[in-house]
Structure formats: structure tokens, C-alpha cells
Image 1 (cartoon, rainbow, N blue to C red):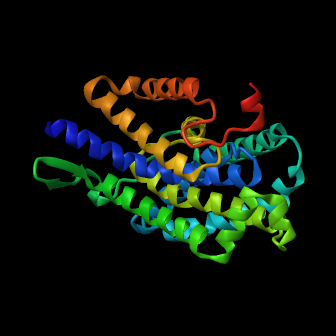
Image 2: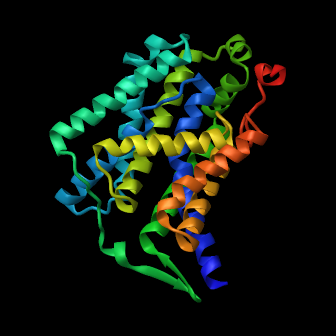
Length: 293
């Protein structure tokens, strides 16, 4: 029984971190209809910067999210204004190709400047744990999950308690209606892309502590994040939450009662089964084409 409880808690801790990483990806798709394939590369880029800053200064890697989050917000805004805006209104395939090109560029730059080998930040608490009764909780995962929940809470407040958030949600739900009341779709898209990149800023700093990484590992991360938002429903923040928790629980249960090698397979098998029943995901919106099909 204790092992099952600990497995559930660990799964939820991991799922909380995944939810943060996937939130930016599903937000950008919900507002702009763009699948930002570079989101995984953003995570690895920030993980690399966090690792380097931790080595040079000794500052806690997770606390470095206070710097990497606004840094990625600015980078996301610049990228949108200089690059992404050029494919706005074109087919989804064009935006996927463009963001894939950005991901390859980041990977190439990291290969040249940092080398293609594994790294991981290991602060002093990395091997320590909290003990609650008979349940043992690794401090690194607890701190990582708390940081992810804090960022997600701030994102929730921005989207639901500010005029900017209302403008973003209005554009996502009814772009034409939002334009009629004076909301600039271009400004909202730039802001949404910047917020999506900012979530990768916080997520990348947490990733640097919880997982080993190297430049090409962004392929694994974007595959995982796409799986989460497809499972939850493309464009649904609530779906990203639920999908992330399912992934976290699937990974920990498979690793505990089976083998870690099967964790990813089990997760994608769950996605396949869900999509057979609900092709638009758990919380996705059924499109007219779906209804006709």
C-alpha cells in the first residue's frame, strides 16, 4: 500500500512539472493555431544556460527560473516579431517547418558552443528527501513541482484576472468578435508566443535539475509535450494539466511495477486508446470536420 501511495505522489510531482512544460505549447496553439515544434529546444536551451550559470555562480538552478523566465519572454516576443509573424495566416505546415528550423538552429548552436554530451545540475539537496510517515519524497522533485505550480498559478491569474488575459481568451474563443471590440490580434499573438516561451524558461531551469539533457534531447521533449496536449485536447490548458498528470502517473507506475524502459511505451499506448474513443482529445473541441467524419 505504501509503495502505491508513494508511486501516486511521485507521479503527481512529475506530472506537475510536465504540465508547466506543456502549458506554453497548448497556449500558443489555442491562440495562434501554431504547433511550436521549437518548444522542446527552448527547454533544452534554458537547461543548458541554467547549468552553466549554476556552475559559474553556485545559485540554485530552480531559483534561476526568476531570470530565465523573463529572458525567454523577451526572446519569444522578438522571435514572433522577427520570424513567426511572417508565416501568420499561412498553412499550419508552414509554421511547423519554421519552428522546426528554429529548433534545429538552437540544437546546432548548442552543439558548437557546448558539445553534444549529457549534463545535469546537481544542487546539494539533489540526493536528499523529505519523509512523511513511510512515504519518501525527493527534495529536487518537490521543489521542481512547487516551482512549476507557482508559475502555473501566475499564468492562471494573468489569463483570468487581467485585461490582457481576457483579451487572450477572447481572441482564442472568437477572433472576429475580439477584433470588433478593438483587440489587436497581432499584439495578442506576440504576447501569447512570448508567454509560451516564458513557460519554457521556468520549465528549462527545472529540467536542468530533474533530468540529464544534451542538445539533441529536444526531440524527446517535444514528442512528449505533443503527446500530452494531443491527449488533453489541442489548445486546452485544462487538457494539458490532465494529460501531464496521466503521463506522470503512467511513467511512475510502469517504472515501479514494470520497467522504466516501458514507461514511454505505456504512455503512448494510453494516448492511442484515448484517441480511438475521443479523436479530439479529453478536453478538445470537436471541429466541424470531426462531426462530418
